[in-house]
Length: 249
Image (cartoon, rainbow, N blue to C red; front, side):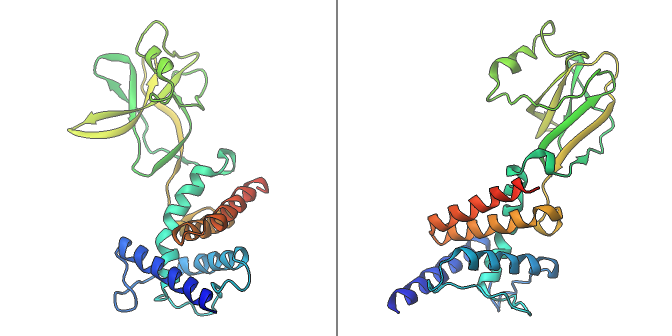
């Protein structure tokens, strides 16, 4: 019995520490949770009940009327958006719903009229595809300068860089109006910087995540909570279940 009491105290301490880190108060501090997130919170609790061995003393019952001031609810609510982000990064690209950029044209490079860049949206998370008006084919892979060092260096040479037949794009940072911005650079065009399309995966709040990823989301959130409470083995079990979800989609 003493061990179970210690487990409960350890768990509640971890909860309190994380809530302090996020600046989330308890009953007196408000801790309001949107109704749209309450069903997701209960699903996370159900996952926790599934991975925690019976008799361990840490059970998360799914209530009919969720108590939004419950510290467990506040903790789950605090990690949901990060869990949603991780799921969008982990999931196979072909099962995700991309969005189309609102940009209709790129910005011509000040030193070279054949290349240019597109400022990435603040919610940009993953690259899907892009096609400029002059290109004969779209691009589905993006150069990462810190990894693809030689290929990125080639794009700086007008004789060997990508062209309209075999275009290339690369992530970069540019100073725009005195502020560092994330951009995707394109190589290269003939006489038009117009965009046919630019699709990407956007970061979103947990309650707006596409429906077929909710199971993955709740497993990942359960894993995060197990990490916070230093239950590494149970966390890994939850993360493994998250990966299995993708195989069924």
